[in-house]
Image (cartoon, rainbow, N blue to C red):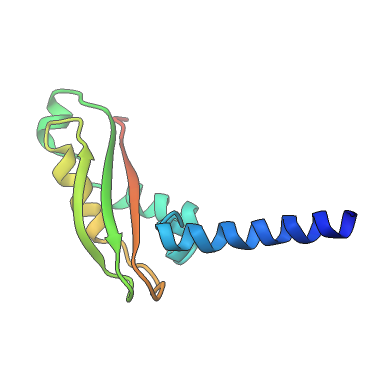
Length: 118
């Protein structure tokens, strides 16, 4: 009985990975050299804070949705959560600069871009 349960659990684990891959639930950071830590560091270092947002002390998080193409290109980036003051446009611009490894299939993803004044 234990061996059947173990086999079933392994099967569920394999099925979950396959379904995640097909549904686009694999995070984009899995295809970024250095992983999530390096990707977030790049976003922080490359982000140009919009002057209007800085002047109005706008802080928060924008969310950028995009499709990661088969060869690692970013397709159709759009800001689905915008905090205003030009932050949405700045978030899209910095996400477009990301360089991903080729996953071999299309993956739909979202990336948070944090805007925080020092």
